[in-house]
Length: 80
Image 1 (cartoon, rainbow, N blue to C red):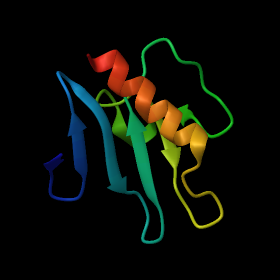
Image 2: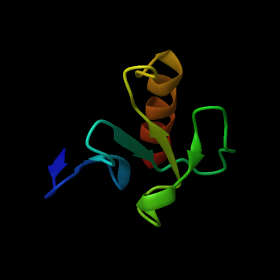
Image 3: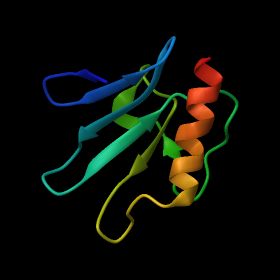
Image 4: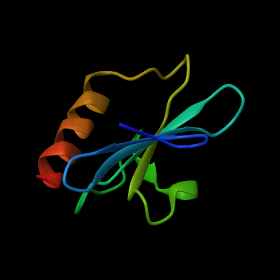
């Protein structure tokens, strides 16, 4: 992990993920996933711009589940 002012960056050989507060009540998880289409919870990168290709909004009504863990694992595998 690499702490930032308002975000935490996760790296392997390159950046894998980034979690940052997007609102007062909701963090977003940005993922660097190559060749992965937008999906139900997987959105365009939005505020993450070039750091991540996709993002997931995390909330009480939409906490991380197995699919989120699978996407994180895929991002780690792609990073080497």
